[in-house]
Length: 253
Length: 66
Image 1 (tube, chains in turn blue, brown):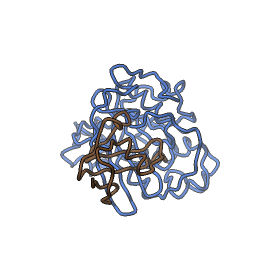
Image 2 (cartoon, rainbow over the protein chains, first blue to last red; image 1 turned 180 degrees about the vertical axis):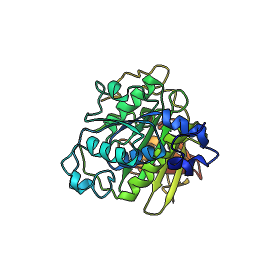
Image 3 (tube, one colour; image 1 turned 90 degrees about the vertical axis):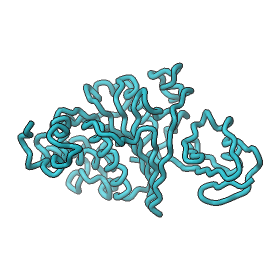
Image 4 (cartoon, rainbow over the protein chains, first blue to last red; image 1 turned 135 degrees about the vertical axis):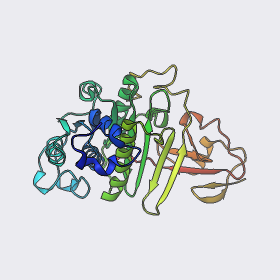
């Protein structure tokens, strides 16, 4: 099956793992991305560039100058603009074939269903645990994968949660999230490597490739380049995804 | 007994549980990530898993920024 824009995707379509069939799956995919900051900018950029056909992107914040050291979709002239619209503009210019639906919305239990829509993957570009728990519960209710990522300083973590096959976010972090908002240190390349891994995980899920980070938590220390992979077994006692768990619970929040 | 904690060999009490070692090592992070011999340890397992001579433990502070 010939993709009508083979030139744009030629370099990935010649990879036997992708090919025209994989490219067609990317074109038909609907991905929800929560957060368009350091992680989200890079994730969105790579997914649009790779030919993901439909991106639903949500962020409630405006661009600030302190974002510009790492949030590659937002530039100096965008200061004061909603991140969703700034991102939408750049992504449309990058790849006009990618259908972008941009939302200026907070990720909450009462908004998330409409935001996620018919997406088949949820990707995490958020900056706090509380909102991540909303994504986690939505992933479990809808039965779709949730690609988690987080960064601070020189460090980052990545894994993919697959309902029914892996632990969930709240297996790892069952305690209530603090509502305190702290300004965390972060340098661009750290967001870069975590977000790139998340984008790659998302592409692999869509195309149907093996080797996804299921049941493995990757922790990266950028200061000394230590990469740690932790095996995560299923957690039968999870209050959210376990047999007695409530997927609609608020996880303590 | 001797185990390795965060890459450093140290003496810890015999038959200590993960829960006891978290306190012993003064780890106060609520959302602490604990790795025991390469496996993630869930908070609900802290009191039941007991370390042995030669085990490795890593206490990692999670990264929730984005």
